[in-house]
Image (tube, rainbow, N blue to C red):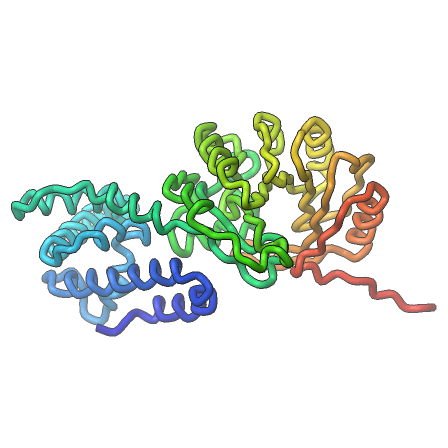
Length: 366
């Protein structure tokens, strides 16, 4: 069986990152191995794989990445193979009904349980086994070297519906990543990841490099969107309070919900202001907000911004717009950046230029 080029490319693209994060590497490897096993089984189903089709690519189209977990946890190969045949039938049925043909994790779990019953095996709650394992293994993700201010990310909640709940921002990188690997960007709570703060140890170099103590929370979501269940936020905040050894950095485009929270000492709290229309609401909320560190993220800076008062903030981040599938890269004019820098200095804010900000003065004498 030859591995599909799609998976070779995926492994190659994320190879360097996986070397730094063995947990991610193990997850990807288990997923690839599972896809190969699915491909071997469906190849033997009469008429399922047509001549010239790649069985590995078809196997990947049957289930999403997360949905392979009940199969990976099932140690009995006979049960796995029987279940895969049922998954193939389920996918074909969904496709004929005009639905999304991918089989979900819950559907895979039900199929595995039913297969165990049919073959006379005791039925185990495989999902609980998977979750317990995930709780023990869940750790923060290490970011790239370019992200100096927070070397870790933590995503107990993923997905977003956009600032107004009607669609995500055109420049959203998180949507691209989520759609590529999970085929959805719907808001999702992943409770096993709440154990990551306790499972990840603060590295020794955090003493000299503060970024190694900082964790960017929900880089793949907006935790404070109106659509986020209050209990999700409460459980995340409880995990934050119980991990004082870390500094957690929060960022939202919906700052009004920040006022509902009693912020612990290890929290930095920020809001995105990419256009002038967000300025007034940001200042209004942060004037009343009590948090140890309060900051503005002007990334991407899409137009010149004017603030009457910045005294309610401690820190300002300024950045450009990176390229995503739905929007090209964009660099703000230097005059916009310079104006923000002057305003920030006037009120004593610390300033951080993101690596994606390439704007600089380009002046010549006349």
